[in-house]
Each structure stands twice: as structure tokens, then as C-alpha cells.
Length: 317
Image 1 (cartoon, rainbow, N blue to C red):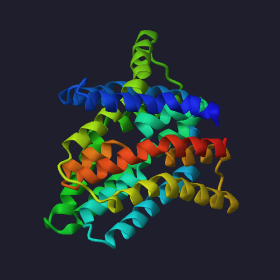
Image 2: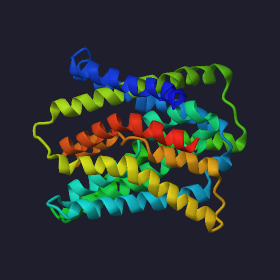
Image 3: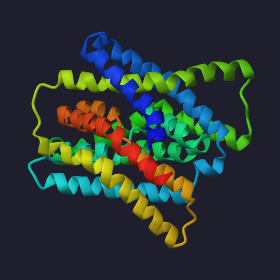
Image 4: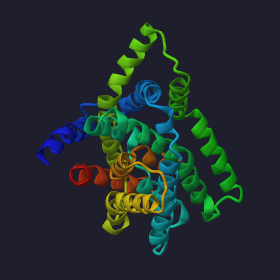
């Protein structure tokens, strides 16, 4: 367990550094969008392209893994909405609560952390989950968030916004280009690849620092208090129910004869054990959901994940 904590500690420590820097005004809040832009449009696409290009295409297009993870994502969305809609929460807040429960922080945190723990072969399954969460889980939750009926064209407009967001997001394109390069055996010229590698190497530390800064900004900008009962259960669903669900469905699929490798299942279970994705707070703000509640779920899941994720790694490896 100590050896695992020695690997996971620096990743969570960088998140804490970003949080402290923003809370103590060492990092101006106005600078955070610039960090986000660097990570999202430069460093992270290069990292994902490099992993995609060096990963066998069969690992990136593992139909069994995609089916298991997608089914669990849909179940997580349905379960979380069912639990939260029983109270006074409307479709908008319930849907983004479901998204934050089903969408792990795989891009900014998961890929580099899992590669450090399990080796480069963990990148393929982790990257496949990113595509599912960005294309399917996010689009579904955004569409469901429009069911409150505030606008009769709300669902259609949300679908267009979701599609526009997917097309404008560089991460799926970087993954697709990496997969194409892998399938064709294509290699970039060395000076271009060296430049890409420099940006890729910056992705992990800057992304983790940015997560902390984004969480601090969300907390600073929150103007209302949120009862514990509206965010603590969702954070626990993310960290406990999600990995158990993925593991149970995956083992059931293997028992039924589905060709799913145990190593790939281990990777996606650990992906599910990651804290919630920090970009959900920005989506929630854009669509008028309770961003303070979403930010608290992300913050709590990130704090608790240091212990719960490390325990999951110890149990599975």
C-alpha cells in the first residue's frame, strides 16, 4: 500500500498546489482560463495523440470493453437521476449531478496516473473510456437537463450545443488521429514528434495543477451554501458505486463468454474509481445548473479519491 501511495501522492499533491495557489491569490483567477486553454488545446491533445499512436489499434477499439463501460455509464446516469429526482431537484441539476457521478477525470488525471501505476499498456483502455464519456455520457446528460421544459426547443438546442462541443473539443480529434497513425504505422518527422513530446510531457503536471485551481475558483465564486445531503451522496456514488458497478458488470460479461481481458477490466475499474471530471462544473455553469453543488461534488470526490483510489489499486493489482 505504501508503494502505491508513493506513486499516487504526487498527482494529488499537484492538485493541492493548484488549489492553494488560487485560494491564496498566488495564481490570479483571471489566469486560470489560460492554463485551461494550454492543457485542453496544446498539451493534452499531444499526450493523447502520442499514446494513441503508440497503442495497438485493437486496444483502442475493444468492442467488449466499450460495451461494458458504456452500459455502466448509462446505468450510473439512470441510478443517480432516480435517486436525486426523488427530492426537490429538477431535471437540470439532477442531470448534471448524474454527469458528475458518471464522468471520471480520466483525461487530466487518469491517463498519466494509470500509466505511472500500470505501464503504457493502460493507456489504450483509458483512452477508450474518454471517448465514451465525451460522446455518449455528456451528450445524454445535457439532453436530459433540458427536460424541465423551460424552453420548448430546449432539448433540440441542447443536442446542437452538445454536438458543437464535441466537434470543437480537440481531445477526440487527437485520439482519432493517434488511432489512425497507429493503424497505418505512420510516424511524424522527428522534429515534429520532439515538439509534440515536449508539449505532451507538460500535460500531466499542468493539468493537475489546473484541476486544483479550477476547484478553488468554483468554491470562491460560489454564492450559496449547499446542504450536505445534496452533494455528499453523489460523491460517494462516484467513488464507490461506479467502480463496483464496472467491476461487477465486467466480471459478469467475462462469465458469459465476452472476450474482455482482465487487465483491460482492471484499468476501466480504476478509471471509474477516479474523482469526478472538473470540466463538468464549467458545463453546469453554461447550462444554468447549480454550479456550487457540482463544484462541491468534484472537490469532495477529489479529496476522498486519494484514499479510495489508492485502496482500489491495492486491491486490484
